[in-house]
Length: 42
Image (cartoon, rainbow, N blue to C red; front, side, top):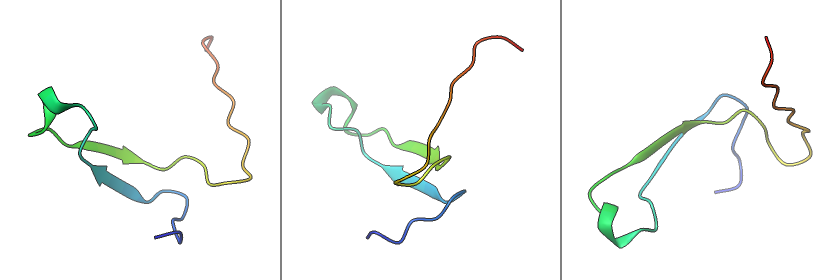
């Protein structure tokens, strides 16, 4: 799948054997070509 869009929810299993029963859930905040800036101050 390469048709992800900004804001999509992605669920996947982590590639860590000890966490095989866990799922990671993420909301896409950027797509290829976007620039993401992380700030620590408010």
